[in-house]
Amino acid sequence: MKVEKIVLRKMSMQLKAPFRTSFGTQLQKQFIVSEVHTKEHIGYGECVAMTVPLYSEESVGGAWHVMEEFLIPLLFEQSELRHPDEVTACLAPIRRNNMAKAALEGAYWDLFAKQNDVPLAKALGGNKTAIEVGVSIGIEENIDDLYRLVEQYLQQGYRRMKIKIKPGKDVQVIAGLRQRFGNIPMMADANSAYTLEDIDLLKELDDFGLMMIEQPLAHDDIIDHAQLQKQLKTPICLDESIHSVEDARHAIELGSTKVINIKIGRVGGLTESKKIHDLCQKHGIPVWCGGMLESGIGRAHNIAITSLPNFTLPGDTAGSSRYWMEDIIKPEVTVSHDGLIHIPAEAGIGYEPVPELLDKYTIQKQEFIR
Ligand code: OSB
Ligand code: MG
Image (cartoon, rainbow, N blue to C red; front, side, top):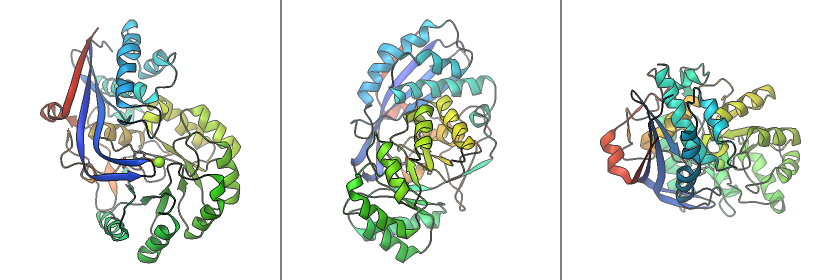
């Protein structure tokens, strides 16, 4: 891949509605778009680090700095990178900074697929033509607003509801939803809002037949989660705690998790995501693709990785209209009435970023010429 230029754009887009988790509320979304240019093609990536490092230690400003000062110079030092796996290897000396790495690695994957004239899903080894989609619903102040949202998403066809919980907004909320909507496919995501001291409360959640409970304990823990899993029937799904295939192996060996939420950014790219997918498949651990409120560019990568066979549970890859008044890609991501997204047949990510819309939401742009 003869890359002549890399472009970084800092983007700012407003979500349709505030999204509240146990760690904070988001309305104005900032993120970085990365472009890798050859003479013929542009590969696109998205950095999912948030403005403020509340989900992980990475942030928009920090990721930009790491890409500019360290990652892009490392890539430009190589004479030629022939496969995206070589991008991963080239960036490996830099510790962590996974979201910054994934933004560049994802752009190289898109470029690689475009050069080979195949869909990204196929380049990754995916074999599905469509994927099942769920939706992640933030914490609502008012229970009736939550009921309205669940009803609306069920009507739109989403195949599972993920409900954000935190202390004071947990057992009663889930009980209310069960009473109102019956046995719908439902799970809860705590974003690390509890400790082992809350074991009795977490056991109460066991009565509601949830598909899983996501990251109930500390963001960097795999020890206490193993303790907790021994005392819960409900499968635990780790999100924040898994940054690599090694983390996944440790968590599986300890019995800390029965499901893994794979986020491409959190684990440092598509190559590492594939490794985690393969390891989990070997151990009978189902995976699904998490989301970070991405624009269409990041969403397209999420859709492509979900085409791999062990992504057997609906992911958080909802349609563009769940987040945005207008997305920056054409066509926008749409979900069918039976909760499926069809994998695009076009080369690369399969959705075309619209130049005018990219420019419209860009608040900072920098070009790095090789
Ligand atoms: O914990 O999965 C999470 C959004 C931002 C940060 C963390 C999380 C989330 C979501 C939303 O749950 C998933 C999405 O719809 O993109
Ligand atoms: Mg989560």
